[in-house]
Length: 198
Image 1 (cartoon, rainbow, N blue to C red):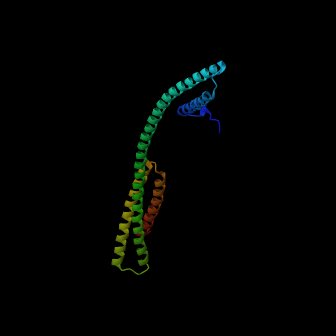
Image 2 (cartoon, rainbow, N blue to C red):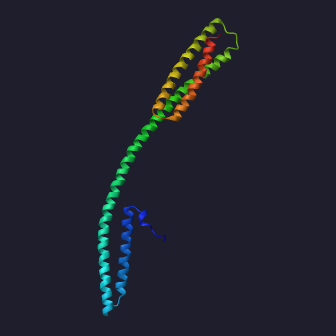
Image 3 (cartoon, one colour):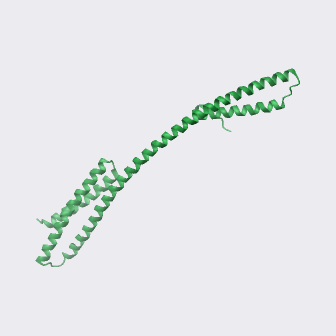
């Protein structure tokens, strides 16, 4: 069995080791007393000394148990205080996770709407290979202008999400929003080119 370095133990652990040592000694002395021959003067003297040692260890155990009880109470109070702090921290963590989740949901909604716009643009690209009538052209331009306006709204929403993510120090959400903003701004430039050809 490895020798325990008392200095490496907490006060609680040191008390436990000391108590254990006292219990072992009391058990050892008890065994010696039971086997001891007390018919001689020397045997009797030795037995009296053992009784004194037994009493000293008994006193040490009584005091140790009191200290151990106090230490146990202190440890319980520390444990309860730590549990309270962890519960408060856990609530903060849950709230922060919820904030992150809400931002990601807003970002996902914008991304979903952008996909819908891309479907609209794909339809326009398919139609532009045909020779549209003047009325078709007016409708296409009106549709593209609406898309351009929607993209501007999405850019504003994405910038607000990015700003909020920055304020809350959600770097991952900020990076995701930057990627979306690049896509949105690129789409707006392309639409601007179509709507205002040089």
